[in-house]
Structure formats: C-alpha cells, structure tokens
Length: 318
Image (cartoon, rainbow, N blue to C red):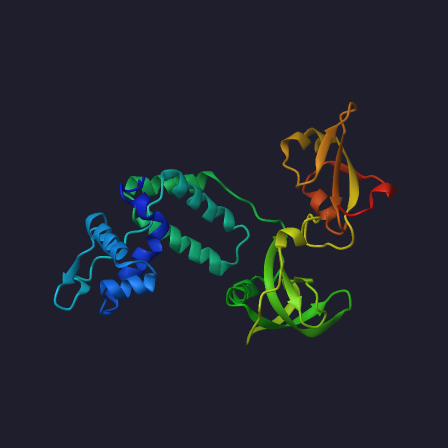
C-alpha cells in the first residue's frame, strides 16, 4: 500500500502551493522567485524551500536560469505525484465510493469512480487487487423506493458553489399548482430515497424545503446572492427527516417485540434516549418540531412501535 514519503508531512498543509508552482512553470510563464512569492503570499526563501523539496523529494526536473532568474522544466513528462494516502485512508475512500453509489446521482458516481481509478493506478497490482476485493466484500443498499429529480442535483450544487440564484418551475403539492420560484440555494439533503433543497425563497422571504422530485424546470440565473446567516445543523435540529416547524415538543415511543430487542444495537438521533422496561419493551424519548416524518422514520426501525399520547406539559421549546 502507499506510504507517506519522508518529507511529505512537512509540506502537507502547503501542498496546494507546490501544485500552483508546478502549474505556473508548466504553462510557460516566466516564473521568478519573486513572482511566485507574490502569488503565493510568502517570502522568496519559502519559495526556494518549496522548489528544493520538489526537486529532492518529488524528482521535479526544475532548472534555474541565472541570467533570466526564472525556473523551467527540463522535460515535460514529469507531473506532480498523487497525494500520498495511507492504507487505511485508501480503504476508506474505496469503500466510501461504493457506499455513495447508493445515494449519489450518476454524474457524481462517475466522478468518484474516476478519482478512485487515478489513485489505484498509483499502486502496484497487488495493492489494487486488495482494494477491489474490499469493495466487493462491503455492500450498501439504497432505499427501496427512490424519487425522481436526480438530474437537478449537479446543477444545484454548482449554483450553491457559485452562489447564484436559481429559477425553477415547482409543483406545490399542498396547493396543487405549479409556480415559478426564485430561490437562493443553500443546502441539499437526501432522505428516504429523495433529494430536498433548502433555499431562501425570494417570494416568501423564508427558507422552505423543496422536494426536488417536484421541480419541472430549472435554470441558473446570472444573479449572485450574498449568503445569509444559515446553519443546516440548527435548521434540522429537531427533525428526523426534512419537515420541521413550531416549538420542539417531547415525543414518547413505546417499542415492543423486535423493535425493543434491537433497540440497544441502534444509534439514536441526538437528544433521543432509550430506556428498557421490565416487560421486554422500552421507551424511546426525544424532541421533535413536527411529526410528519416520524412514521417513515419508524418504519426503518422495524417491529412494533406505538406513539404514546403527547405529554401536554412538555411542549415548550428547548
């Protein structure tokens, strides 16, 4: 498996700077120590250390012209090596790529496979075969029923990166009609086989959740937005899916049969606690802002689950 080179850890946090030096020299720019230092926002001595490392540790064929005071490659076949990963890091990446195939749209799956192929090409044949075997030995199953709308995910991710407002034709299920919405995209969430978008709606001046399966048309505008204060973690703090609203209330769930038998094997959402009872059942208690996603969430638990009557004394927010 790939091992870290002796000098790599010293320059790990500045690897981007080495890549930029390689890019500028390769494109034929008249690179001087001073020009590189200015672009990288470091002093010339640091640039000289970078170049020495590239020559001695990475084998870069960099030549210095004392008359022009510029750097150039003596031949163009050399390229920057792949980032050096440990055995555990490579295994995690290989298995992670397989797991993401269960939820990622096709364009991203293809990109992940290309990335993994590049990393595997840097390994000897025995190492490649070992990682492929690990992929085959670990499997991930997607949701039994998936929703449409995956074709919009890549465009939405690009709009989020560029902070561009989107314009979409959206069918509102509650009103039974299609409208054009202008939205600043902030966050994507995958839940129960479907993709959802959280964005600032120019019409309502709020951050609603849009089911991407109901998008009938989408385009990215040239209007850039200034990001407002938004935290996905805080937004979904009291949700087990994608719906939310109102003050957090206490929910009490009685688990019986197989649900109770396997309860100790599960990692419950933050804020939920499970207490076994003497009759082989158990009580799961937590706080939710809205109960719309509760049934689909409970279906994944399996077994018998009873939603107990609401405790009227525990409706206040946290």
